[in-house]
Length: 217
Image (tube, rainbow, N blue to C red):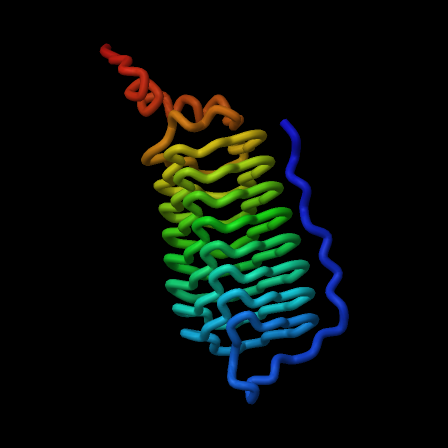
């Protein structure tokens, strides 16, 4: 089992975002910018690039960041419902203590990403590609990994509730340290993952149903 490589982020001195400039812009280029306690709800940042940036305490309700690129950046305490990062690319990113609901990451690419603390409801990662990603100390409620590719992904002290792994392709995925492992669909796609003996016991009814095995006392 190969362990995930974590990002090593060293932010340079940052320039505060100029709110008077009219908010986020489609295809905007943000290099070494800090976004602190800003209301970015509903803004349009499609295709924008964030390099060496820090987002701290920002509201992202219905914010469009479709196809955005987030590189060597730290996002702390962000919150929002319906944030769209569909098709986005996140590389060397830390997401800390987020409070998000219905965030769209389908078709996204995540590489060397740590998601630490916080809670994300209805996370949509369908058809996404995750490589060297760590979910640590967070709660994922009804995450959808349908059709995604997971390589060197770890769930550390993380609660997975109602997860959908339908059609997932896994390689070196470590689920052993998940505090909760609830799978509603896709138990047949766990090939390439490692689980603990106690998790195997909990998943036994689903695995038996998958192969048509009837268990009777």
